[in-house]
Image 1 (cartoon, one colour):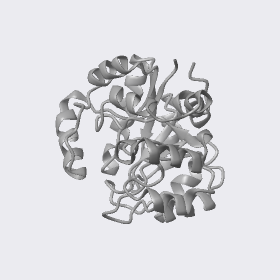
Image 2 (spheres, one colour; image 1 turned 90 degrees about the horizontal axis):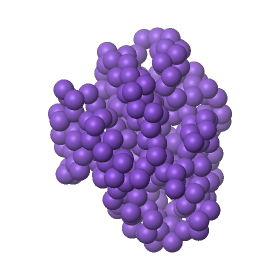
Image 3 (tube, rainbow, N blue to C red; image 1 turned 120 degrees about the vertical axis):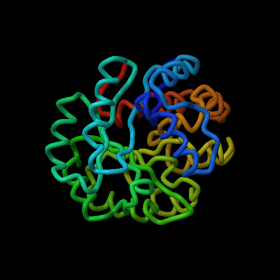
Length: 263
């Protein structure tokens, strides 16, 4: 069975432990993974995952290029990885870095407005969406009850402004505010992953949200190293879904999101 994990964070060995510690503090949870490439590869194998979309978040403009170099190198070394680039709202020449990311073989971008301390619909990011619209897909962290940076209403505004933007509105479109995500995003055109969502929602509400949005919009994701991929696969398989829905969510939709055949 093909499985694509559409949401994985990785870090260089030298900074992985500190990065994971900081993420754990940000969300006040005990992290399950160590964030290194080797640890993800081991967990990926144990989970029976075929491909993983890997990325990292740029907390400052000066780290964008080094992150993208790291992610690109790991995708060259490990054929099971699909690399997504980082961007920051204060990066000076976004177009040049998009071109460089394409040349490096990276397949999309990842943004986390909450940890990057920027509104998802900030004019600086709106300029970035214009650059990648219809060109490269975007994973966008969405939702947090503690602040407003990635509120679903901002995601809706982005989608209305850039209708050709291929977007994964991560965490069912609104981590910890899932019902608000339904209110704003039910009728929009975007993908959504189940990462860091089904663990809180349980199988009944997870299935309800899949039915509301449509299985053809949903991506499987573990949010490694927050959660163990094998446990997340096991959790997903407990959902009362048809074989067709499972196949869409586990890998077919990921090919549509990335825009390439992954198998």
